[in-house]
Image (cartoon, rainbow, N blue to C red; front, side, top):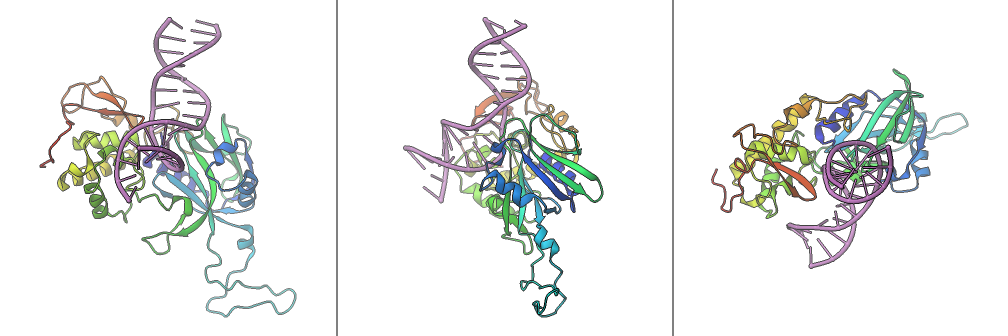
Amino acid sequence: MPELPEVEVVRLGLSGLAGARVASVTVFDERSLRRHLGPSEDFVDRLTGSTLLHASRRGKFLWLPLLSEIQENQPAEPAGGPDLLATDAGTPAFRTDTDGGRPREALVVHLGMSGQVLLRERGTDDARTRIRIDLDDPVHGALWLNFVDQRIFGSMAIDELLPAREVAGEWIPRSVSHIARDPLDPHFDDRRFLAALAGKNTAIKRVLLDQNQLSGIGNIYADEALWAARIHYNQPAASLSRARAKLLLAEVRLVLGKALAEGGTSFDTQYVDVNGDSGYFAHSLNVYGRQGEACPRCGRPVVREQFMNRGSHFCPFCQRLRTRALAR
DNA sequence: CCCAGACCCTGTAGGC
DNA sequence: TGCCTACAGGGTCTGG
């Protein structure tokens, strides 16, 4: 179940693809294009022939900016020079806009529950490959990028790049622009997040999972961070003291950072990096998936309850639901 | 606007 | 052995 650390590992694996050219695209299952606005032919046409640039990420979404064939064939604008239009045959025309060479759109990837991006030598198939991108890479040669997704909650799409809100020169796909920054992002706004918490009467876990408030956290890391901060998943967000909310945010950062350092969580073959290797964070989990086992802090059994159509794992002793505002 | 819950999707595990 | 059901949950959408 890829969350921020897992997606970041995939992003790092894809960053080496910068400069690779898309030779061809095959869509085996159109359901994997659910987020693409337009038919699959449009997806294939816009991707084929373009060059991939280095991968970016916002929360659990990642994207590879695309340089189109047309842009590549255009000569660079002369520095400081006036717009030169063709005056006779054979003289190249230059674009008038100053950022004519920047990527206009990107290949957006979301792994959903079971998505994998696997880089293989050309000709190496993977079971349940929904989309294949055939690449010519200047360093690695002929590659297949196999988008594998058992449950098809993930997707690929081509989307327009827009300027990011807070940071000049940063671009983000339109379909991702509503996703909040993740808590490890240097531009994450702590004060704004804490203020949002104070204004929400809903359960704290629901807020942690709300990608519009802060991104990158899924069910696993929500449970782990709440356990570390000793907060019950159903505690109303607004009932947390500011100190308690700050502690929770710090624990979120700790658990995400630790998982990132260990290469992401893995329980089975559901999550793998671009080489198909698993992470090792599963050994570090304190409550997730450990119902019935001893709480690592107090020794009492960990409990699993249904919440938001998901399992919530917690220690009923360490994480008690409090009806009055938390003092500390 | 805020909030809660339904829905999508399929390989695997477990019961009988 | 084989059939059946329950289960996993990220993100979007709808309805109150």
